[in-house]
Image (cartoon, rainbow, N blue to C red; front, side, top):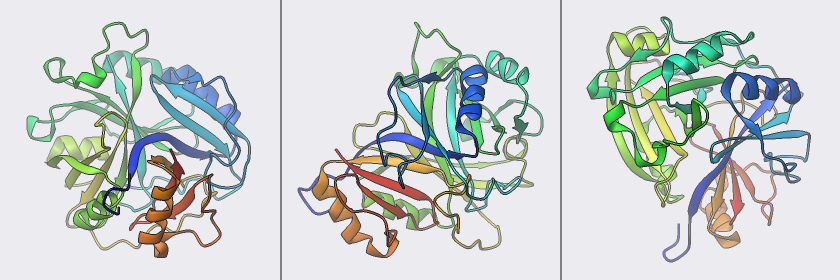
Length: 298
């Protein structure tokens, strides 16, 4: 961004497309503890034409489910595919979260042997990946008791699922993607190299070696963005998902002001959706791997 001009402030919400948002919202409420925001989503907040949207909340974070007539989720997309993007849910008790999920129908596991504790070199977290009834990837994430980040220390939490920590996106080149997001004022907050049998069970990917790069917003609060770069995989083309395809998850990012939106559009004119609006309502663009971003003013 231009010196002195504000860039990204925070990740306002996640946007998922759904063939039946009301039905899918029932799964998120019952199996994962989401609640209704209580106000309808504003027109255009989905990142394209104003259509039916169910606005949900988990803790302090928001998730929108938007009605879509696009292509359904394309099967069991592996973690190294540029189509892959998951939302990570922080849980206070992994066993309890997994048990509650297990009694609800429709979801499918990604991880091959239930929740898995990753080694200390990979953060020492316990994680479990799965798909919601329409195929969107999700992750339960539990920190070791002595290493819970301040943002997730919730002694008064009433639910086992606390909130949305990040969206993880598969990328072909970590440096390229980190530079793109740095241009929007995100910064690298963490790096790890995840490998071994635990990562293989978590991802259902044989012999993975994954560069995991956490990108934080200026205030450092969740949710953030996580880059997943799988080494040693064949080159993958950028995502060709249309904005209304079920797999076309959107990150809705609040910029500092309308000028910051315009500056981002000017800097990334080649990534701007040609018929997307650049006005008070925001702008729609794609990152280097084709993931969708909706930039809003303020």
